[in-house]
Image (cartoon, rainbow, N blue to C red; front, side, top):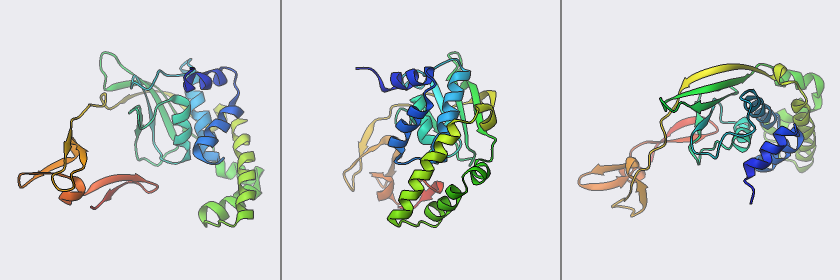
Length: 237
């Protein structure tokens, strides 16, 4: 069976960005400008490295993203660098940017490649070209209007807006530069221990020894962190 990444590679080679957008929209759940920007950032980065794919998610290549919005879903689908295979790094900087980096074999904490950051004010561009999209975006996304007819209208025009974005030349969308960055070392494998209180298994690095007990973070009442739409935030047990 062919790997999913091979299909994406073939579509990139054929410059069939419309089909790639459809694949990403299916994963993401809907069309929107964010996934279209992610598609074009990932494709442009791969093309600048003269590649259609970057390995099989074994951390030899890393995708470093600076936002946790829709953009990042496209990056994961196209590059194959995901949270689950530890090849996706999230830096909570609030910038719509992607760095695609190859790990240095001599210094595994150094990555070299390219960084793409959006330079076009896409909301202003769409407001001029598709004013109805801007109106519906505000109504549905910002003010959370979930009326069925309004949602349907928004979904239709969001698809049009997304397709419009992938028609832009990448040079208009992004500033693309060579980049060398410090990156995390290969993800370690930690043993599993059991919490003495709730009896659930937990990674040893996320357990605490308290009064001769091994406790998970919730049972030990130690704050933990979560990634949400707000970014990385502290969560109390």
